Image (tube, rainbow, N blue to C red; front, side, top):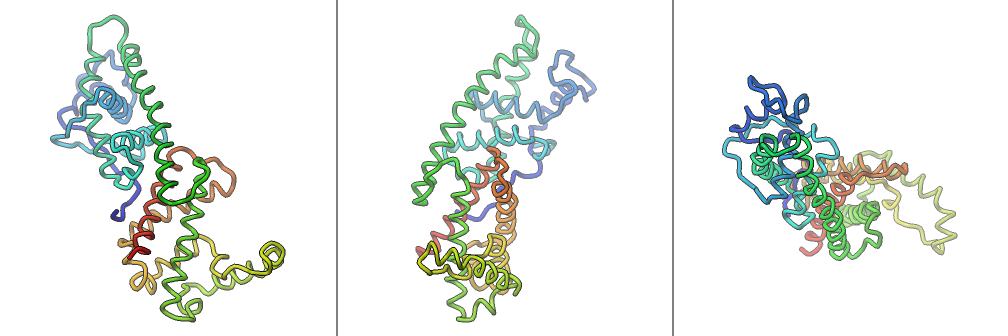
Length: 313
Protein backbone atom coordinates (compact mmCIF):
# COMPACT_ATOMS: atom_id res chain seq x y z
CA UNK A 1 0.00 0.00 0.00
CA UNK A 2 1.45 3.37 -0.97
CA UNK A 3 1.53 6.25 1.45
CA UNK A 4 -1.60 8.39 1.20
CA UNK A 5 -3.15 11.54 2.68
CA UNK A 6 -6.33 10.70 4.60
CA UNK A 7 -8.22 13.85 3.70
CA UNK A 8 -10.69 14.55 0.93
CA UNK A 9 -9.52 16.86 -1.87
CA UNK A 10 -10.33 20.51 -1.17
CA UNK A 11 -13.15 20.59 -3.75
CA UNK A 12 -15.72 18.10 -5.01
CA UNK A 13 -17.15 18.38 -8.51
CA UNK A 14 -20.39 18.05 -10.41
CA UNK A 15 -20.64 17.91 -14.22
CA UNK A 16 -20.55 21.31 -15.92
CA UNK A 17 -23.69 20.45 -17.91
CA UNK A 18 -25.67 20.54 -14.65
CA UNK A 19 -24.32 23.88 -13.44
CA UNK A 20 -27.38 25.88 -14.54
CA UNK A 21 -29.66 23.28 -12.95
CA UNK A 22 -27.77 23.49 -9.65
CA UNK A 23 -28.15 27.28 -9.72
CA UNK A 24 -31.83 27.03 -10.63
CA UNK A 25 -32.50 24.62 -7.76
CA UNK A 26 -30.81 26.84 -5.15
CA UNK A 27 -32.33 30.05 -6.55
CA UNK A 28 -29.05 31.59 -7.64
CA UNK A 29 -29.52 31.24 -11.39
CA UNK A 30 -31.17 33.41 -14.01
CA UNK A 31 -33.95 30.82 -14.08
CA UNK A 32 -35.37 29.53 -10.81
CA UNK A 33 -37.29 26.31 -10.20
CA UNK A 34 -40.04 27.59 -7.94
CA UNK A 35 -40.96 24.16 -6.57
CA UNK A 36 -37.34 23.37 -5.65
CA UNK A 37 -36.88 22.17 -2.05
CA UNK A 38 -33.30 23.49 -2.29
CA UNK A 39 -34.18 27.20 -2.55
CA UNK A 40 -31.94 29.06 -0.15
CA UNK A 41 -29.78 25.99 0.40
CA UNK A 42 -26.37 25.09 -1.06
CA UNK A 43 -24.83 22.92 -3.75
CA UNK A 44 -23.65 20.65 -0.94
CA UNK A 45 -27.26 19.65 -0.20
CA UNK A 46 -27.99 18.88 -3.86
CA UNK A 47 -24.75 16.92 -4.20
CA UNK A 48 -25.43 14.68 -1.18
CA UNK A 49 -29.05 14.01 -2.16
CA UNK A 50 -27.95 13.19 -5.72
CA UNK A 51 -25.17 10.95 -4.43
CA UNK A 52 -27.63 9.01 -2.26
CA UNK A 53 -30.07 8.57 -5.13
CA UNK A 54 -27.30 7.49 -7.49
CA UNK A 55 -26.13 4.87 -5.01
CA UNK A 56 -29.66 3.59 -4.31
CA UNK A 57 -30.43 3.26 -8.04
CA UNK A 58 -26.86 2.07 -8.85
CA UNK A 59 -26.31 4.91 -11.28
CA UNK A 60 -22.60 5.73 -11.30
CA UNK A 61 -21.68 8.01 -14.21
CA UNK A 62 -18.29 9.56 -14.97
CA UNK A 63 -18.08 13.35 -15.21
CA UNK A 64 -17.25 14.69 -18.66
CA UNK A 65 -16.37 18.24 -17.61
CA UNK A 66 -15.88 18.49 -13.83
CA UNK A 67 -16.85 21.75 -12.16
CA UNK A 68 -15.11 21.97 -8.77
CA UNK A 69 -17.65 24.11 -6.95
CA UNK A 70 -18.29 22.19 -3.71
CA UNK A 71 -15.85 22.64 -0.85
CA UNK A 72 -15.30 19.32 0.91
CA UNK A 73 -15.12 21.07 4.28
CA UNK A 74 -18.70 22.25 3.67
CA UNK A 75 -19.91 18.64 3.85
CA UNK A 76 -19.71 18.79 7.65
CA UNK A 77 -19.64 15.63 9.74
CA UNK A 78 -22.86 14.03 8.49
CA UNK A 79 -22.07 14.59 4.82
CA UNK A 80 -18.46 13.49 5.20
CA UNK A 81 -19.61 10.30 6.90
CA UNK A 82 -22.02 9.54 4.00
CA UNK A 83 -19.17 9.98 1.51
CA UNK A 84 -16.92 7.65 3.52
CA UNK A 85 -19.69 5.07 3.96
CA UNK A 86 -20.38 5.08 0.24
CA UNK A 87 -16.71 4.43 -0.60
CA UNK A 88 -16.46 1.61 1.95
CA UNK A 89 -19.64 0.02 0.58
CA UNK A 90 -18.51 0.41 -3.02
CA UNK A 91 -15.08 -1.15 -2.40
CA UNK A 92 -16.23 -3.49 0.40
CA UNK A 93 -12.99 -2.63 2.16
CA UNK A 94 -12.08 -0.13 4.89
CA UNK A 95 -8.80 0.43 3.04
CA UNK A 96 -10.87 2.38 0.51
CA UNK A 97 -10.26 5.35 2.81
CA UNK A 98 -6.51 5.16 2.15
CA UNK A 99 -7.12 6.82 -1.24
CA UNK A 100 -9.19 9.94 -0.64
CA UNK A 101 -9.01 11.05 -4.27
CA UNK A 102 -10.77 7.83 -5.24
CA UNK A 103 -13.26 8.31 -2.40
CA UNK A 104 -14.11 11.71 -3.89
CA UNK A 105 -14.43 10.27 -7.42
CA UNK A 106 -16.87 7.59 -6.20
CA UNK A 107 -19.03 10.24 -4.53
CA UNK A 108 -18.89 12.53 -7.57
CA UNK A 109 -19.84 9.79 -10.03
CA UNK A 110 -22.80 8.59 -7.95
CA UNK A 111 -23.95 12.20 -7.53
CA UNK A 112 -23.63 12.64 -11.29
CA UNK A 113 -25.74 9.54 -11.89
CA UNK A 114 -28.31 10.49 -9.27
CA UNK A 115 -28.82 14.12 -10.30
CA UNK A 116 -31.15 13.40 -13.26
CA UNK A 117 -33.24 11.22 -10.90
CA UNK A 118 -33.41 14.09 -8.43
CA UNK A 119 -34.53 16.49 -11.16
CA UNK A 120 -37.21 14.05 -12.29
CA UNK A 121 -38.52 13.73 -8.74
CA UNK A 122 -38.76 17.50 -8.39
CA UNK A 123 -40.26 18.17 -11.81
CA UNK A 124 -42.56 15.16 -12.12
CA UNK A 125 -46.27 15.77 -12.38
CA UNK A 126 -47.28 13.17 -9.82
CA UNK A 127 -49.46 14.13 -6.86
CA UNK A 128 -47.89 15.73 -3.81
CA UNK A 129 -45.38 18.49 -3.41
CA UNK A 130 -41.79 18.00 -4.69
CA UNK A 131 -40.15 17.92 -1.27
CA UNK A 132 -42.54 15.21 -0.06
CA UNK A 133 -41.95 13.14 -3.21
CA UNK A 134 -38.22 13.50 -2.84
CA UNK A 135 -38.32 12.69 0.88
CA UNK A 136 -40.28 9.51 0.18
CA UNK A 137 -37.72 8.38 -2.39
CA UNK A 138 -34.75 9.29 -0.21
CA UNK A 139 -36.11 7.49 2.84
CA UNK A 140 -35.14 4.21 1.18
CA UNK A 141 -31.69 5.60 0.42
CA UNK A 142 -31.02 6.60 4.01
CA UNK A 143 -32.30 3.28 5.36
CA UNK A 144 -30.00 1.49 2.92
CA UNK A 145 -27.03 3.57 4.10
CA UNK A 146 -27.80 3.00 7.77
CA UNK A 147 -28.20 -0.77 7.32
CA UNK A 148 -24.99 -1.08 5.33
CA UNK A 149 -23.05 1.30 7.56
CA UNK A 150 -23.01 -0.88 10.69
CA UNK A 151 -22.57 -4.16 8.77
CA UNK A 152 -19.61 -2.80 6.79
CA UNK A 153 -17.80 -1.22 9.72
CA UNK A 154 -18.33 -4.29 11.93
CA UNK A 155 -16.99 -6.63 9.26
CA UNK A 156 -14.00 -4.38 8.59
CA UNK A 157 -13.23 -4.22 12.30
CA UNK A 158 -13.08 -8.02 12.28
CA UNK A 159 -10.61 -7.84 9.40
CA UNK A 160 -8.42 -5.34 11.26
CA UNK A 161 -8.41 -7.54 14.33
CA UNK A 162 -7.45 -10.66 12.39
CA UNK A 163 -4.73 -8.86 10.40
CA UNK A 164 -3.14 -7.27 13.43
CA UNK A 165 -3.70 -10.16 15.89
CA UNK A 166 -5.19 -7.84 18.45
CA UNK A 167 -8.28 -5.74 19.13
CA UNK A 168 -10.62 -7.54 21.53
CA UNK A 169 -13.01 -4.62 21.69
CA UNK A 170 -14.17 -3.53 18.25
CA UNK A 171 -15.46 -0.19 19.50
CA UNK A 172 -12.33 0.87 21.38
CA UNK A 173 -10.20 2.63 18.78
CA UNK A 174 -7.60 3.45 21.42
CA UNK A 175 -6.55 -0.20 21.18
CA UNK A 176 -5.46 0.51 17.61
CA UNK A 177 -3.50 3.61 18.59
CA UNK A 178 -1.83 1.87 21.51
CA UNK A 179 -0.67 -0.94 19.25
CA UNK A 180 0.61 1.57 16.71
CA UNK A 181 2.34 3.53 19.47
CA UNK A 182 4.13 0.42 20.73
CA UNK A 183 5.07 -0.65 17.20
CA UNK A 184 6.54 2.79 16.49
CA UNK A 185 8.54 2.72 19.74
CA UNK A 186 9.94 -0.70 18.89
CA UNK A 187 10.74 0.47 15.37
CA UNK A 188 12.56 3.57 16.61
CA UNK A 189 14.65 1.64 19.14
CA UNK A 190 15.45 -1.12 16.65
CA UNK A 191 16.58 1.24 13.89
CA UNK A 192 18.45 3.79 15.99
CA UNK A 193 20.21 1.30 18.27
CA UNK A 194 21.73 -0.30 15.19
CA UNK A 195 23.32 3.02 14.27
CA UNK A 196 24.91 3.74 17.62
CA UNK A 197 24.96 2.38 21.18
CA UNK A 198 24.64 6.04 22.27
CA UNK A 199 21.52 6.68 20.18
CA UNK A 200 19.66 8.22 23.12
CA UNK A 201 22.27 11.00 23.18
CA UNK A 202 22.90 11.26 19.45
CA UNK A 203 19.56 10.59 17.77
CA UNK A 204 16.93 12.36 19.89
CA UNK A 205 16.12 15.83 18.46
CA UNK A 206 15.51 17.49 21.85
CA UNK A 207 17.46 16.56 24.98
CA UNK A 208 14.53 17.68 27.11
CA UNK A 209 12.66 14.59 25.86
CA UNK A 210 15.17 12.22 27.46
CA UNK A 211 15.12 14.25 30.68
CA UNK A 212 11.31 14.04 30.77
CA UNK A 213 11.37 10.26 30.16
CA UNK A 214 13.87 9.75 32.98
CA UNK A 215 11.75 11.82 35.35
CA UNK A 216 8.65 9.84 34.42
CA UNK A 217 10.51 6.58 34.85
CA UNK A 218 11.70 7.65 38.29
CA UNK A 219 8.14 8.50 39.36
CA UNK A 220 6.97 5.09 38.15
CA UNK A 221 9.80 3.15 39.78
CA UNK A 222 7.77 2.24 42.86
CA UNK A 223 4.95 0.89 40.73
CA UNK A 224 7.42 -1.10 38.64
CA UNK A 225 8.78 -2.69 41.80
CA UNK A 226 5.31 -3.51 43.08
CA UNK A 227 3.73 -4.88 39.93
CA UNK A 228 6.59 -5.97 37.65
CA UNK A 229 8.89 -7.76 40.11
CA UNK A 230 11.33 -4.87 39.95
CA UNK A 231 11.72 -5.11 36.16
CA UNK A 232 11.27 -1.59 34.84
CA UNK A 233 10.46 -0.84 31.21
CA UNK A 234 13.00 0.69 28.83
CA UNK A 235 13.42 4.45 28.81
CA UNK A 236 11.66 4.89 25.46
CA UNK A 237 8.54 3.25 26.92
CA UNK A 238 8.01 6.43 28.93
CA UNK A 239 7.81 8.54 25.77
CA UNK A 240 4.61 9.91 24.30
CA UNK A 241 3.39 9.41 20.75
CA UNK A 242 4.28 13.02 19.92
CA UNK A 243 7.87 12.34 21.01
CA UNK A 244 8.10 9.30 18.73
CA UNK A 245 6.68 11.34 15.86
CA UNK A 246 9.35 14.03 16.35
CA UNK A 247 12.14 11.45 16.47
CA UNK A 248 11.04 9.73 13.27
CA UNK A 249 10.60 12.90 11.19
CA UNK A 250 13.87 14.51 12.39
CA UNK A 251 15.96 14.92 9.25
CA UNK A 252 18.94 13.15 10.82
CA UNK A 253 16.81 10.03 11.33
CA UNK A 254 14.29 10.26 8.50
CA UNK A 255 16.62 9.87 5.54
CA UNK A 256 18.73 7.16 7.08
CA UNK A 257 16.14 5.01 8.86
CA UNK A 258 12.51 5.81 8.22
CA UNK A 259 12.07 7.16 4.69
CA UNK A 260 12.37 3.63 3.21
CA UNK A 261 9.40 2.58 5.37
CA UNK A 262 7.02 5.57 5.25
CA UNK A 263 8.16 6.99 1.86
CA UNK A 264 6.66 10.49 1.82
CA UNK A 265 7.50 12.82 4.73
CA UNK A 266 4.69 15.31 4.07
CA UNK A 267 2.06 12.56 3.97
CA UNK A 268 3.54 10.94 7.09
CA UNK A 269 3.36 14.29 8.91
CA UNK A 270 -0.22 14.90 7.79
CA UNK A 271 -1.43 11.46 8.89
CA UNK A 272 0.41 11.50 12.21
CA UNK A 273 -0.86 14.98 13.05
CA UNK A 274 -4.42 13.77 12.49
CA UNK A 275 -3.84 10.90 14.93
CA UNK A 276 -2.32 13.30 17.47
CA UNK A 277 -5.31 15.63 17.12
CA UNK A 278 -7.83 12.82 17.59
CA UNK A 279 -6.02 11.00 20.38
CA UNK A 280 -6.35 13.69 23.09
CA UNK A 281 -10.14 13.65 22.73
CA UNK A 282 -10.16 10.03 23.89
CA UNK A 283 -7.63 10.75 26.59
CA UNK A 284 -9.91 13.43 28.02
CA UNK A 285 -12.94 11.14 27.91
CA UNK A 286 -14.64 13.02 25.09
CA UNK A 287 -16.46 10.64 22.72
CA UNK A 288 -15.10 10.12 19.22
CA UNK A 289 -17.55 10.48 16.35
CA UNK A 290 -17.90 7.90 13.59
CA UNK A 291 -15.85 9.88 11.09
CA UNK A 292 -12.94 10.14 13.54
CA UNK A 293 -13.08 6.43 14.40
CA UNK A 294 -13.13 5.40 10.75
CA UNK A 295 -10.34 7.76 9.77
CA UNK A 296 -8.26 6.85 12.81
CA UNK A 297 -8.47 3.11 12.19
CA UNK A 298 -7.70 3.50 8.50
CA UNK A 299 -4.57 5.59 9.19
CA UNK A 300 -3.41 3.29 11.99
CA UNK A 301 -3.94 0.17 9.86
CA UNK A 302 -2.03 1.82 7.03
CA UNK A 303 0.97 2.54 9.27
CA UNK A 304 0.87 -0.91 10.85
CA UNK A 305 0.91 -2.48 7.39
CA UNK A 306 3.96 -0.42 6.37
CA UNK A 307 5.77 -1.44 9.57
CA UNK A 308 4.82 -5.08 9.08
CA UNK A 309 6.12 -4.99 5.50
CA UNK A 310 9.42 -3.56 6.78
CA UNK A 311 9.68 -6.34 9.38
CA UNK A 312 9.18 -8.98 6.68
CA UNK A 313 12.00 -7.49 4.62
